[in-house]
Amino acid sequence: MITEYRPTHKMSTLINDNNLLIMVMSRFGISLGFGDKTVQTICSEQGVDCATFLSVANFVSNKVCAVENISLPSIINYLKQAHNYFLDFNLPAIRRKLIEAIDCSGSDSVAMLIIKFYDEYVGEVRAHMEHENKTVFTYVDNLLRGVISANYSISVFAEKHNGIEYKLQELKDIIIRYYPQRENNLLNSALFDIINCEQDLMLHRMVEDKLFVPAVVRIEEKVARGEFMMSKAEDEELTDAEKIQTLSEREKEIIVCVAKGMSNKEIAEELYLSVHTVTTHRRNISAKLQIHSPAGLTIFAIVNKLIKC
Image 1 (spheres, rainbow, N blue to C red):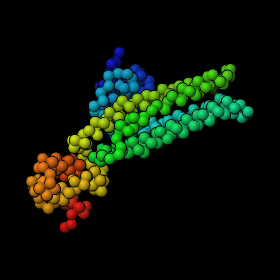
Image 2 (image 1 turned 90 degrees about the vertical axis):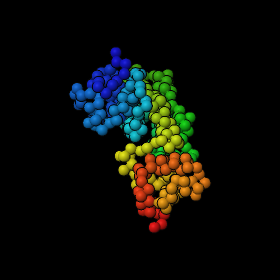
Image 3 (image 1 turned 30 degrees about the horizontal axis):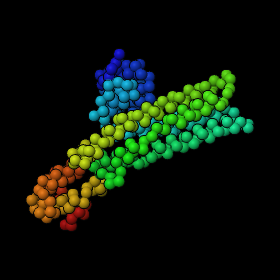
Image 4 (image 1 turned 180 degrees about the horizontal axis):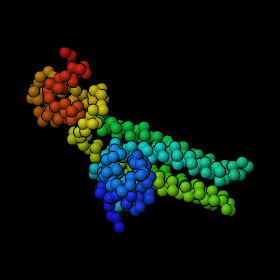
């Protein structure tokens, strides 16, 4: 029995061990037809962060799960793809099957109420997932650029993150209890799809709670301590205007002082700070801008009109 999926395992071995990983692969953008290639090889070829894929695969399979090396951009993309699957494919497909399986053409009020219940539920799911896409993931994108929000943190999301799958349990019970029909294979198939969707949504929520949220907390703590540094690739994607948004007003003041040729001691005296505080700010500025020389900071300040020539 496999206790932990590893990069050296064949991807086909993982799928044979847990068929649910087909959905995980799909949401990471991994296509089928990979033969006997290893997880590491496939992830490298298809541009997927291997550590993040394995963290999710191990987690949903109840195996040993390492969460320390999760890539936030990678897991956010995974969660967004899951949202697309639910909203654009899975939930609409279930609705079509329900409409075909139950008689909505006559005066059967139960049938109409089942569809009404389902449509209202899908509306709640859409609002829930669109909030995550627009608010939560945008917050994390900014956090990865070193921008700390004054009125939001991932704890706000975590405290209010309730499960959205429980209403499918209620819908399933309503159909089983109050919509009697014999030999309705299509309705049984719809019920089976509802059960699978309920379980899929539950796993999705648990990935957000147990993998995504802790990963964001770690970055929040690093940014607060001034220890977080963007990768070179991430830095090159930012415009100067976006980089300036990551700077605090104090950091901008220090850049101006550096551009004026002032030493750390002189900056400390000018801004009524300790030399140690100035040094810490300088280190944070270098991490955010990826500029390490006084000359480079001077050019940045002039080009971006932080200081006049």
